[in-house]
Amino acid sequence: MTSIELSAAGILLGGFALLMLAMFSVALVRGLVWRRQTDTSAAVAPELQDVLVDYVSGNNDLTRIRTFARTNRRDVAAAMMRFEGALGGSALDRLCDLALNLGLVGEWVHDAHSRDSARRRTAFARLAFVSVYEPCRRFVGDMLFHALSDPDPEISLWACRAAIQSGTGEQVEAVFDLAVSGSFLTRILLTEALRRYANPLCEHAVPQALRSPDSHRVLAVLDMLVAWERAVAIDNLPDLVGHRNKDIRIQALKLVPLIPLTPENRAAIVRGLADPDPEVSTAAALSAARLKLEEALPALARMLRVASAELARTAAAALAEMPPRGWEALEEFSTSPNLATAAAAEGALERARRRTGL
Image (cartoon, rainbow, N blue to C red; front, side, top):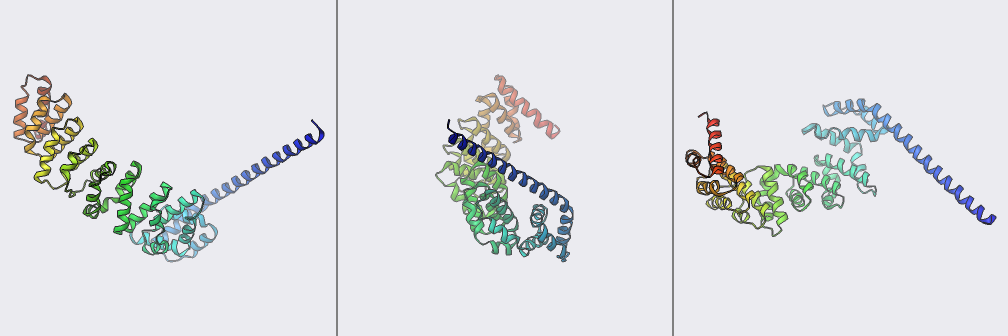
């Protein structure tokens, strides 16, 4: 190896060493800065919290708050977010108005356009929090609504929560559409938030979605309706109970006790008892028992007589909820030569009598 080559290698190694040293120095400085910020935040947090509590309680003196906003601006924003879920009414309005007047909402709008994903998520979380306050919604404009379809799922969820808080029909229906067409996790997170809008959604959005040819979408709507446990009007229940998708049939039968019990719907339950899938027939039996559907007695009796031991116990429990005719059937089946049938009937009848003190 020539001296020139050795010199070049030495220069490269030296440059690499300097680069590593520079990177280490930057990391060290960042660590020290972060540590100092963390210590400062911890030191001012109790006083800042007290100041904000005084303000939302009605104290209009902003002197100390404005001082904190100049010297510890990040801490002010973080302290405000700690009130999420703890405030409501005029107290929450005062806090949101304070964020607007301090210019924090404007900063969050700016951060929402950042290329840094962590900064964007933080900004949208904070904007969703203050969007409950109408002047903040006006200031933010349509940005949160457009973010419903953001490719970042976390930002999309924050936008959904903000849209739900706004309470406008168009935005709520857009969130509902996202919930029933998105992932299972998205639906879980949005179902409870949409509960308070169950009635207006059931007027148009829900029936339209239940008529969709997309089985995934139909099942998602049924899952939400069952979770809401609200009385709803569905005009195509017999079609859902007879759907080719087993899960849709099961969820539709679970929903039966929550909808108007028309003759068509009663007949759909009875048909469900004869479904070849045991999970579907079990769901039908539970609904028949809850509704004390007497026209289901023959089908339940047949299930008790010829079905598997597990289904027989389900049918017997359903019959036990329908005295006196259901009890009479159980008494008769308790003497059946079929040991599984007799055991299921006798056990259900004994439990029913014990509950009623007989």
